[in-house]
Picture 1: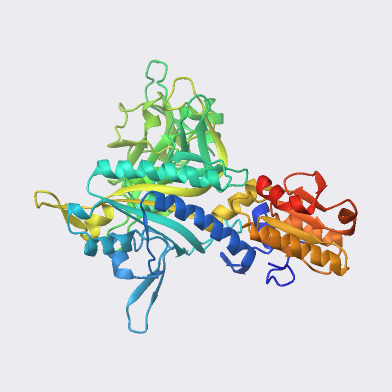
Picture 2 (picture 1 turned 120 degrees about the vertical axis):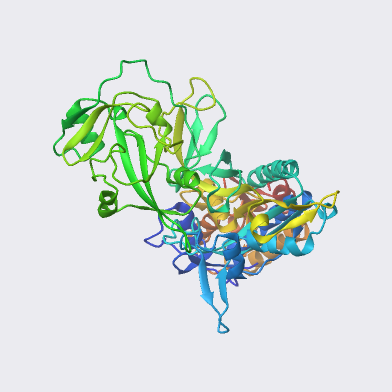
Amino acid sequence: MRLSDLFTRTLRDAPSDADLPSHQLAIRAGLVRPVAAGSYAVLPLGRRVMRRIEAIMREEMEALGAQEIVLPVVQPAEVWAASGRLYAFDGVLQGFTSEAGRDFVLAPTGEELVALLAAREVESYKHLPQLVYQIHTKYRNEPRPRGGLIRLREFSMKDAYSLDATVEGLDRVYERILAAYDRIFARVGLDVVPVEADSGAMGGRASTEYMLAHAQGESALVRCDRCDYAASDEAAVFAHLPPEPVALDPVRKVATPECKTIQQLADFLGIPASQTLKAVFFVDERPGDTEDEFVFVVIRGDLDVNEAKLLRALGGGTLRAATDDEIRAVGAEPGYASPIGLTREVTVIADLSVRAGANFAAGANEAGYHFTGINVPRDFDPARVEDIALVYEGAPCPRCDGGSLHLDRAIELGHCFKIGTRYSDALNVTYLDERGVSLPVIMGSYGIGLERLMAAIIESHHDEHGIVWPASVAPFAVHVVVLGKEPQYADLAAQVVHDLEAAGLSVLLDDRADSPGVKFADADLIGVPLRVTVSKKAAEQGGVEVKRRAEADRRVIPLADVVAWAQNEG
């Protein structure tokens, strides 16, 4: 490939709204171009990188015996309604109505259609297990696409789906796919961490997320400093240490003027925030005809509510903050709320932390007043006590004795789900076992976003000059630069390209009539692993100049040694 013929052109400056290095470099190097918010055109150099990533994915999937399929991006909305997810994606699901009046959605994922196909293709246990995958376009109407290629509306995904007759079968294929994902990430040059994760709208009994620690990541990675416990912040749990035995104080109502926040209350009473109870109010909005649910959350004052955990405890829906009028309608007072003395029956969910303390201060449901000496279950006994707290820096590890949890920002790169029979039950996906009994097919789902993965590779492999591609995914193996206008150097470069390509190496030839500075800057920016420079100076020294992109050293070697050098270094 000649740079003079390439559709792509490099840019000296990054767009002003590009914050992440991957965003800046992907545009400057001509890998992609923005088309709309959250939508990018992938240009030839970027497409070459993605094809190499796809090749690695296909090798690993097919080594597991997976079969490649392609599902339509435009899918009937009634299938999504049957699964219960037509509203579960909270506005991310983009729908439209055809001229014939039929409703469709743009697929954000493929569980529904795989289940629909399985219902038609799988008849008995003899047809199981099955593992299928695709590398195809997805669309999610993200309200805030950001990070360049990190969070897109339209993107490519490698998504795989397993169909099994038993839970044990799902467990086996799940572990095999996790091992394949470990290999995929290692082969593209990324040091990722598999963590326990929240299943969210996907559902299921367990999920594993692959995270790359990154200071500007949109997620949080939680790890113990003593053991191998790792989780996303949405799923992380921590140990609640038992309180020191103390005498229980009587309940007292005290005036607390202008103490509407936990910190104001703690400062006024001279107690730590951990000795207060925080009231947080939500409305769980349910799709269709299901009535919305008012939710009163009680949690220790120094902790925050983990909304992902709360949604799991509630069984799904969409959370929004309750209004002051809605709070007062149940007999509570905003800023001074308490589960004691409510005038209306409401759903009260307490965090585990309310049982790991004593003599709490809490609202009195009267402006300007709080209770002190509140103890559970003596003064109020919540019907539901759940783990709904967000993990915090330094929290006690739930798995080992003495470990502390630490939070780092991270980028999510892949997610695997044991989704079980959720979609089989909804879409009547069954098989006949050896006895002729009809049973639901057990499913798993496994995904990696390609553009996001490409961005993560750039984030992990770049310097101040540009991208430094790992050889496994680089758009070309060798970048040949020609300096000088004399025809003999163009001829010499053509010979170098011919020899390299004859040896099976892909070559990008910079044959442009630009200055050496421009050519070298573009070579560093594009980031091909190996560079060969054909010039008068190198020829006078008996050969061509060679250099690894990741290193500063350069040297001249004989022309006859170029192929061997490239093969050994690549």
